[in-house]
Amino acid sequence: MSKFFSRKKAKEALKAFSGKKKDGIMVFFPTIEKYLSVAFGDGTNDSALEKGSVGYLYLNSYTYDGICYNDDDGGILEFNAEKAAEYDGDVCNAVFDAAEFLFGSGTSDVIPSFVPIQIF
Image (tube, one colour):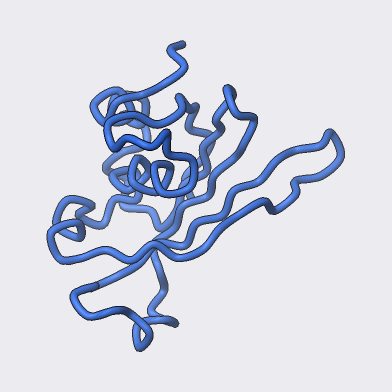
């Protein structure tokens, strides 16, 4: 497996999970030993969205210490109408942007490689 994925390679890795229209997904990044949970917002924070944003993603990253998962980082990633159309209600379509936001390499064309674990 390559150390980095392009947007196209990330889409290929998620192919088996795409189109299921689930609310969230968990993926593992072996090169940085982190897990990432990405889920569409449930509307709780809609009133706090910045102008131009139409939705948001909940993001949480974790490490595993052999006993339990430890919460490392997380937050909310807002998106505009153009991104909402791109995501099309499929959380798999948002994984690249979420990973880029939390683990980005400083460029917008690659993220660390990952393995999808489950959708929820």
